Image: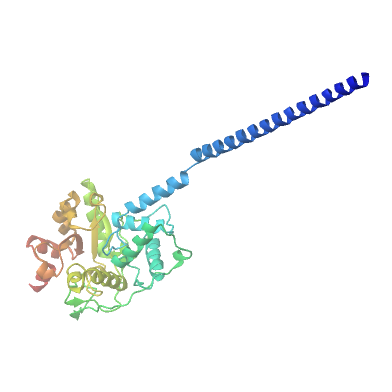
Amino acid sequence: MKSLFVLMISLFTILSACSNDLSDVEENEQQDLSGESDSEEEKVDEEEDQEASAPINGDEEKSDDTDRKHDISLPDEVVNIDSQGEDVETIQEALQLIGYDFPDEGTAITETSQAIIHFQELHEELDNDGVYGPDTGELLNDYVVSGEVIDTEGYSEIELPGFGNDYPPQGKPVEDPDDILVLVNKENYLPAGYTPADLVEPDVPFPFEEDLPQRLMRAEAADALESLFESSQSEGLELFAQSGFRSAERQEAIFASNVDQDGLEQANEYSARAGESEHQTGLAMDVTSQEVNFRLNTDFADTAEGQWLDEHAAEYGFIIRYQKGKEDITGYQYEPWHIRYVGKEAAKEITENNLTLEEYLEE
């Protein structure tokens, strides 16, 4: 009996222990499951927080950059990179966006021309002439819109080339290209290879900093230009010299691009063939002002600087070479910015009698 009692107590003890162990296991499993669930929830919450708080600057920059690219409106006409103004700045900005790096200081005229040539060299469908025109602009715009960047290594080492003469001058060669009163137009052209021997740089403001041929004029004309600018400054005006001497090669490239854009007949109304341009004489200078953003257009005539120039240019030996209403005689459209040195005596008579240089020389 006693043995049976001991056996029953032992069985009860064993069953109690098993029950406790099973409860512990279930509790541990519940804790493990609960911990795993909490951990996963915390992990999911953490990932969501990270996604929500993750920096999106890259996307913002890309979006902003894309917006900025689409905001660029590239000119769809021939642009003289030697000039300054919004068109040139827009072209420079577009070139920078696709990988070309320009110095922060200065106007980077040389680098811009080198970049255009480099860009044209990469595309067989473009004329490799270094002149920005509609075809170059259209393809450049495609790059800007797509955001594509190109390899520009070595572009700044490109030597600006000479240009062939696909559009020879008409008429007859002038007899004395060094004559101050030399007549250069569609009927009278400078001899091939002519470059004035006395080119100097006048001490006047330019809207660019680079040392370029367009700063140059013949010595006598440069001295007169300095006097003209000094007088305008004393009146509180700010004239800027934009484009003086131009080589035959450069003139030919500009004319060819204008022909590509507008056709030969229309280009002839506002652009000269190489040999027929007064810029090659070293006696002409295109002048402008900040009010027209240094552009060369007829709006200049309405500025204070343009009006002063029209009234006083002759006092320093200059004439407004291409006058309004004289297009049939000069062969070119009205250009209030283009002044030509002819000497004080001739300038006085031409201006007072409302003559062109052609009419003056015929008398």
